[in-house]
Image 1 (cartoon, rainbow, N blue to C red):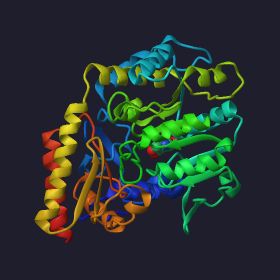
Image 2 (tube, rainbow, N blue to C red; image 1 turned 45 degrees about the horizontal axis):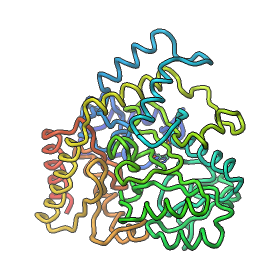
Image 3 (cartoon, rainbow, N blue to C red; image 1 turned 120 degrees about the horizontal axis):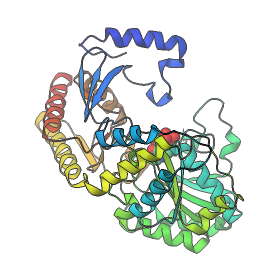
Length: 423
Ligand code: PLP
């Protein structure tokens, strides 16, 4: 529980109750660390706990609330659309509208399949890549997160990477090769020696999950060339970067189109929807039935109405310039607070998603990220939450369309107070 000086009596009671019927009192292990705070409402960029405390939110539900909490236009669109039914075991026109909009908005893909979680979308991409190439191996990169299933969940293990959970079959990692990211020569070497066995290369095109690290200039272009040269399917996992880094996601921002890409979080403003998008010659394999991709809840009216309303909002009233301004000012303000208090505080990344930590190092990949004092920041994040800034212990901050001057002021004031108390 929190060490917060403010009382959390009701949260504590609910947590005790929850722990009797739900393991750990939470429904996702990502929520096991940190204070077990229960919220009763959220509005824009603010959260209110059941104990009456407010928090300015830079976690955004781990990213999805890109339009802020409970965005009126999306709520209304989903509510309207659901009045006439939610799931038919058949199709509804809104699915077509949402799929067309995803392809148009992103620009590069021809087709899209909707699902429910990013984890699943990644698995569908792997299956498709293996079917298309007739190969088995997947190349992935240190520190990138692609969901919680056996073939993608990995933790540092000595000098390599291994399973990360009891019960996870190590054999599911047999076909996975893990390389350092942002090093095109390492990928070139791996593909030169065994490229004929590699079905896909998957990466977060900006490594948001670990440090919000951008690709080095030319890296994505070189990866693209290498994949084309070796007949390997390039998958961008844009579950976090998609629609957040601009309408075209990371592919649009850096001007490199993958063959397949996964989307989720900012796609539907908090509603549970994921998408796999890609070139028609690949995606059509699902349509012929040769490759199976299924799901009872895929493309439901709830999901696709949320996608449609979210993307219409992003297209018609883009929040990107305001987010750029807010995120840039917030990073600068955090750095300034570090200077004022004489601590090496690092705030780096992109305005819509950035990373805060103690320490100072050139960070280009997962290993160099470890040179920062990440453990110290984790402790600090606990105190920051106590002072009313809702953040992730791993240092990633997300900015939404609803963060404005009042939130900037609140965040920096509370950050400064926390530093003063903590140091
Ligand atoms: N891929 C990336 C890049 C993610 O950040 C996540 C979740 O954080 C996933 C995949 C898994 O998505 P989900 O949690 O919806 O299963």
